[in-house]
Picture 1 (cartoon, rainbow, N blue to C red):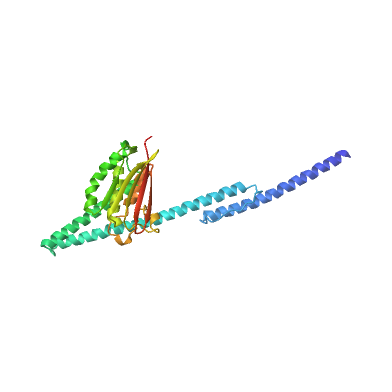
Picture 2 (cartoon, rainbow, N blue to C red; picture 1 turned 90 degrees about the horizontal axis):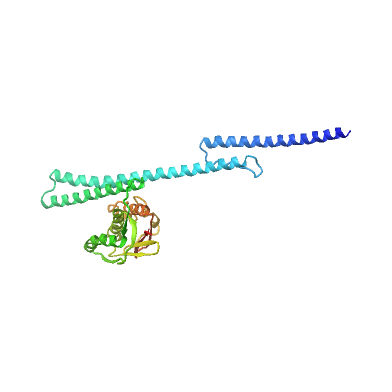
Length: 307
């Protein structure tokens, strides 16, 4: 009698276990069907598809992982589309910036070649054609430099140098340029040594681009360059008293081909500040800008010192 009761209890427990397992199996089967449908949907390109899962579901981790994969792929797709759009905008800008001066240059040369102009007018046309050819040359050089920087193919030759002495040598060449451009200037460089690991040519390019930007675009008449040193880094600032940069343009001025002053599209190529940012980054530094319309702009570069 006791044995029969024991067997009945075991049978009842077994039935309960089987029923529970069948129930779980049914739930898993249903979840797998949902996962299969979701994967098919994602495969067709619907990266917005997500799989809902309860905390108690046995397939919850699989669902979470699939959702994360869909989110990651969606982010990559958005990034690729943005890159494609940026590339198309770049090609459009390049086409305009090359074709416009080239067409103008050809027009002046054709006028000279066909004899439409002569004498002093011919000399003036030759002078204008030369200026436009130089503008086109500088643009192509800047473009190649930016492409190498963007692709990580630019070779740097870092060495330990005195930042202050290097800056003084660079500014000595800029003094006559500033004076001829009608700029008053202040150059504040300490006499003490500031040792830094730097590529002298790249640093020269950084200052040249910033100063050229002041002369060509600021529409001011004062420039201040100052260098100071903290414990672990050096600070270089270039400040002008020009027209400033509008708040809407300020976040974009380091972007390639971006020109804040849209009225001066014939001047500059929109690559100078982008090159500056890439060169500063190559030195593990940082560049920031502040500006107040009608009062001027200040660029600040921080570079790590050699410790």
